[in-house]
Image 1 (cartoon, rainbow, N blue to C red):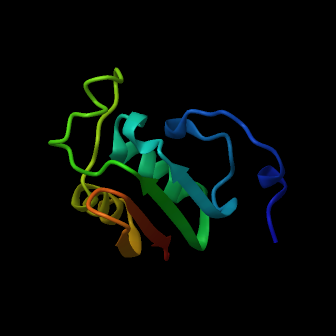
Image 2: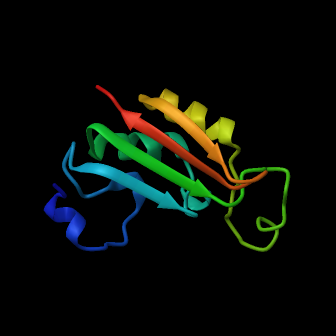
Length: 115
């Protein structure tokens, strides 16, 4: 069952989500982590609002920090490698972290909250 909070779309800062601990079964981030700033803080906040057993799905078309195709055009954009995302997720308490690649740079990282 989806929580009532999932019935609407809201624009919020990831570092300070206005939801109770353990609110969501699933949180997704499509093409957005480039702009989240402090990943440690934001991933901790995502972890907080996920239910035990909940999943966090991150999808990125760019995952090679040395490729400046987009970062040279878009102010504030930071590309993170799959390894950097995985390491940060693990430090924030996520488990069962897997990365799926569609090609060289397109990635989907899935992490689970187990606590």
